[in-house]
Image (cartoon, rainbow over all chains, first blue to last red; front, side, top):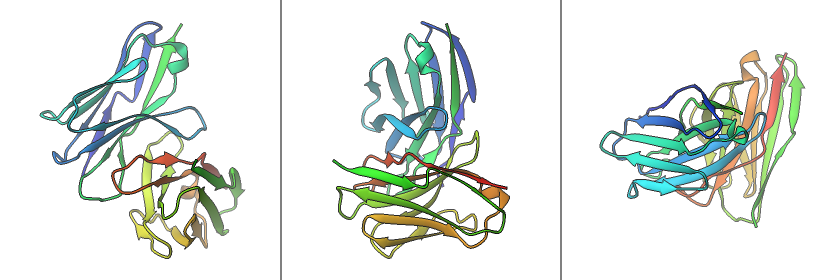
Length: 113
Length: 112
């Protein structure tokens, strides 16, 4: 089945720098990809849902890149600020109406003022 | 608008005691419902999903069971808790397969 690897597990950057989190997946037929953020003790908040037909997706303060050839999904927080210091999870939904979300292990981001 | 409510917010339970966690979706008929578990500091693991009333599919059991007694209700339970059951339990819903997942606020469980 689908395997999702997320790197790095912990990331520390200075305020204003960019922060890049990457996930690789194994199933070339996977079509739906998600990035979630999770504040301590809280639920998951969807940042962006990406379809495999679109390679670059821009949100507020971040960009999501999908490289289908390399089976790699990345989240780039541009100009990170201390409020971005939470956990981030990628998730992949394999094709075929599986109703299964496969999550990466997560990345804890620390943005230093 | 759809709302998702989980209860209780937190529980401290003894090893060997029973457990029942609930999840209710309002404002959407026939939602797809899901249970996820997150160990402290860990990732999320899907436990169960349900497409319709009375039907539940197991993904990873972890000595837990799930039921969907009503269209808008999803219950996670066990007769005997283990220490390894500690963690954060999240319920989620989606309209169909491959649509957006919305997560509840979660239940934090500590088994002692």
